[in-house]
Length: 115
Image 1 (cartoon, rainbow, N blue to C red):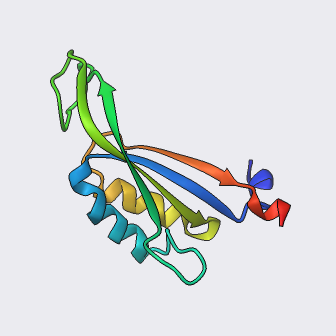
Image 2 (cartoon, rainbow, N blue to C red):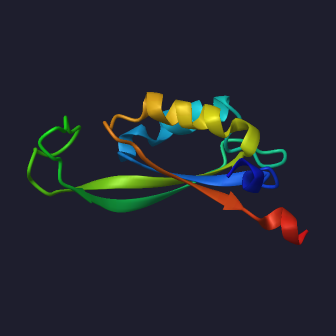
């Protein structure tokens, strides 16, 4: 896996988070150099989404009740990150995110292969 990743320079990180935590997470990610593109920082896109999940017996849910499907307003944050900062960005997400199981996706950006 590491050999596949060594040619990847940047990734997009998607994070699903309660809307009220967007600014706090953006600021923390900016401090670890995620969201920096050229001469700009704090570069994120935020989309409102509906989240659905059912906490199972072992869960300690931030929202909802064990055994019941929950539907709530969330935000999806999309942020670019150089590979060298990904581990720090994930650490920040885990520290800031209020959910027991934060949902995030790390997606390789292949743009530099076409420049």
